Image 1: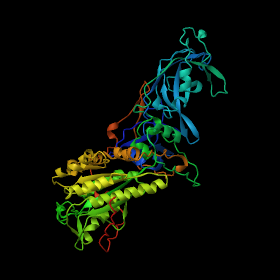
Image 2: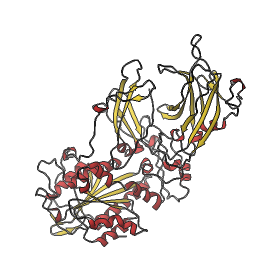
Image 3: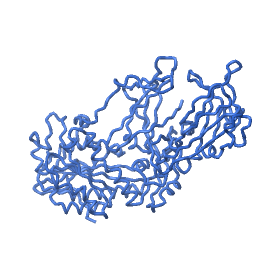
Image 4: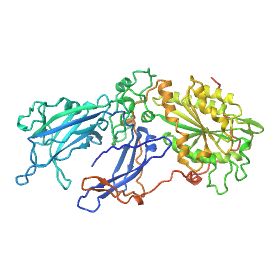
Length: 609
């Protein structure tokens, strides 16, 4: 058995958005429906996977596939009035006449090819084989397709004989599209006498398919289309993969930089069910692409950290200082809280989970170093190794010193970002770097920092500088104002003061990552003219099926007499507190990284451009 459904969720990069999917066997005469399985999912985790697709087993059997895509900017609405003429009676000899209703479905992908997903249903008309149904309002955003082809996308109109039990009996069906419905308006379709209605444009109803028995006619008495396909509107959709031609037409106002299209995956793995890729806002209309469009095309986010080891942080052996590590090993200091909270969010969009980490403001063997490697390797795998390497820095002969110089870590981040995007582009991919710089005080040389930001503004890079501790950070305001004062420089930098969010992890991540989506789109689309790649789909997608959740969430759904779905006891549902930073135990659950026998090697510096 294969079923599909689409739903709409709000999404923000810096916030975890969880949702639970429950599947039930509807049993109308029982007190409750029978649970078939459920699983808990998170939007950012799925968006970070190749193809924005996640597969997860259900504890009671079966597998759930979830693909997430941007809502298309489609706000048009069709209003259609239908009537039936001479419909087939399925009540039998002694049951009177049928009580017809019409259900409209859009075509969606399934393991076997396609299936139909209901999007709107009329009220039933009692005891009438020539019914006139109330007008149907059909948002085009609910039809699978792009703004360019949505009028031609297949629609299924199914006529049912309404039953109080909910087991409605099919009377007939018509396969058509919205364009045909708009063109099928019959001038005298509303005539009181159904025998006088002109059936020239009427849709022929069949019992099963076009080759099956005739079951009457559907007449369109009125049809109209209102709205603008370019407006942004919240919508529910599972759209088809856009074509490259449609994408190019959507961005006719820019000259794209040529980007190789990913080659087909040639692995010989057995075919599995891949839901259809969703249309991006870019292909849906001639509008600016969105952050999710780039993620859907496989753009990878890399997150790097630069940590302040200047003497103003205090002696790390003394409680209360900023780098102090509690003897229990579980409590996180402010640096660690920022690293784990931001890294956990951005890491979802990085397939290899590699974090480059540098330090600055410390001496090794008496020589000041404003950019040195933290950890045994240039990149650290996972937040666990990041935390371990950070904690082991203090046993490597480091002497906390000063001044606070950020220019070198900014230059290095820009060089890494350019290199990663160049390599990705050669492979038909896209990459973007987010550099988080944690410091306990204002920079020593403001002009030097400005020049570094200016040099780096042409890189696929965003920089977030987080102020740690209770210092006066008023001198750091220039970081937010710098781009406004330099119209020829791309805005890549933001300053966030940790103390304002010291007791709310979710608020910190939202504020820290707030400007990243716009900055990414600004770089690729406005600065470089690079379009999002087509959504990853089909054989390009390879994934592992996650195991089922240990504990299932029972939503206890029921139906009212009006067939509305209602939830049962919501008070006992699981609750998640994303304001808490947690402890190091959540990350330090792997074999410790060996302490390097020598001080971290100074990082080679790129030449300023």
